[in-house]
Image 1 (cartoon, rainbow, N blue to C red):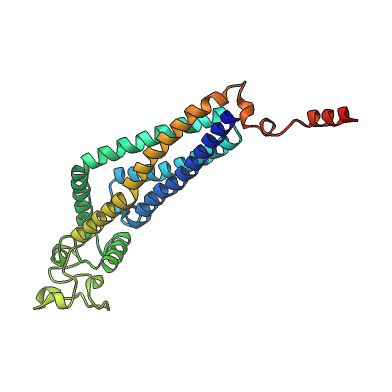
Image 2: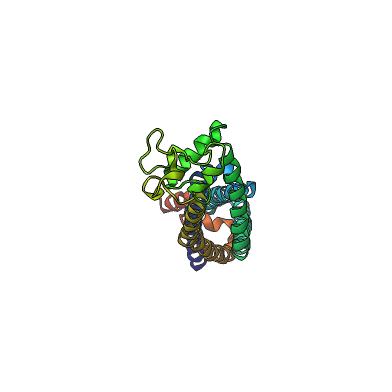
Length: 274
């Protein structure tokens, strides 16, 4: 009875740990999806390929942890010893990968930020030069400038050196009050800050990405990583208690027959009384 109680407690602890892991997997997937929709897809022409890969891996990691943890929870109650061990091994591999990747990113965050900034700056200058000629670049700049309240790459004056600006103009999407022709002849305006947004999109977007990075990393990612480590330690500890019950001879500990009297024995006892 004592062994049965210990195994039952270990089983439900493992089940709860798997369920919590599934929930944290959803949080990881949400982080990836949030980055994907907020910046990577939204600013895709300005984003490097390695950032797409990184965000995709975060999304896949979240899906993998959620799916594996769900199967592990089912395997714990079933019980399915082989499935339990496979799920535990896969989760351990994913959590170790997560911790290693997080450590590398934090060590290289300044270099990565510099690489992102360099790529974005070059991409913004290239697409800005094609404004008014390529519809996709024109729509991109108009959307970003109105959404992020910015104008040009570094400042509104960047438009003066483009073919579109012709030395004096900025897009109408730079205006504080957007209306047709409002960006004309801004170079000759005495107080341009009263007419258009003067701050560039490069520092604005980079600042927004930095804020979201710190918010997501400190508010979601690091707490989830710490929780993953704690839950994996708990799962490994409970798996040691469950190891004996996962042998062919002791698997009956999980079965209903181990706690309920056999039907044939019950009726044999009744027959003997008559």
